[in-house]
Length: 135
Image (tube, rainbow, N blue to C red; front, top):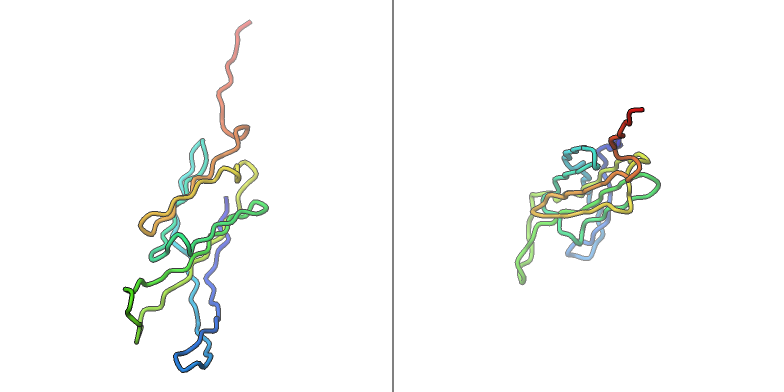
């Protein structure tokens, strides 16, 4: 598995309260990731603070794993934001998976801003012990 990430900036257009369009710079960050590998596969832990399940997208295509998410600052119902000094980031990270991983069996869990991905090895790629007979 190799990490193919970089920090990027993305421009998006949002409407101002006066109805005028202005360009708002969105910052896309690489989330901090821990990768633990064992004989059964890889466990990937990604820090995604402020990300809800509905703003998280995980895709696998042609051996590439892509994580994209948007963080948000929750506001109570009936309140309107007048001024914000905190820039809420987007997150993006890509990984290249080797052919020994079974991408159809990836499991994902998001809890308290931490994404846990379990990426199992294909059964035929797992190490196994071969018994030797005498004679």
